[in-house]
Structures are given as C-alpha cells and as structure tokens.
Image 1 (tube, rainbow, N blue to C red):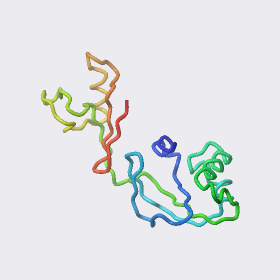
Image 2: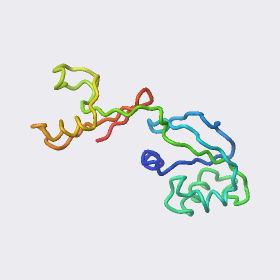
Image 3: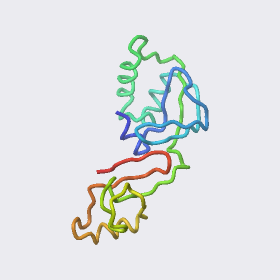
Image 4: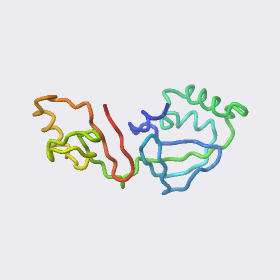
Length: 154
C-alpha cells in the first residue's frame, strides 16, 4: 500500500500512537533506507486535515478509513494525540545504476558475475541506445543504493 508513495517521495510522514524512533534514526521499508528528520505530537484531527498527503493517501477520508482498519478497537478519535514522524530517503546512501542482472554475461568483462561494475547514467543511456539486441530499452535495470539496499526496476 505504501511502497509506491514512499519510493516517489510522496509519503514523508508516519503517525503512530507512540514514538518509534528519534530524530536521526534510520529505518528501512521496501528495500529503501530513510532517516527521521522530525517528531511532533498532533491530534488525529490535525493528522487527517493537514497531513493526509504526506501520509501517502489520496484524501483525508482514505486516511481515516485506513486508520480505523489499523486501530479497529479505538477507531479514529479526532482529539487523541499521536506522534508524527517526518522522514526523508537517507541522503548518505549512494545511488548507482547497473544494467546487468545478477549472474548475467557482462559485455565489459565478458564473464559471468554478480553486478560487479556500475554505469553512470550517461553510460547507461549510451549503452542502451547502441545495444544491437535491445536498442533503446532494458528489461533488467537495477538501482543499487550503496550499502543500504537494492531495487530492481523492470
């Protein structure tokens, strides 16, 4: 439910009934690493009215529906205080692009290996546009986020 909003940078907050971290703490979700940048206490009403977009929802009503589904015993209580955690994708993670899927034959080294070299975006675009087998496209593009995680984009 939240993978796409997180990966697009749309979801930048998460509200919880109690604090789950401190400013500067890191957490991982869907193969991405984030850093907490702020923590504030707000009411569920403020969450609904002012932070539904940052929570990754398309409307305040969608936020309330999901909240009630997660907190079905208590439900949505407008004046109840919750802890809002603000976060960003960890800026210390280095993004590198790779074109070869794991254990594929590498054109540069002409051997079978596990994604052991990287391409710059410029090299990637040139390589894709001149590839005689798959001109202008790649079905196995992966992003390596430094030591943080891997993402495969099809």
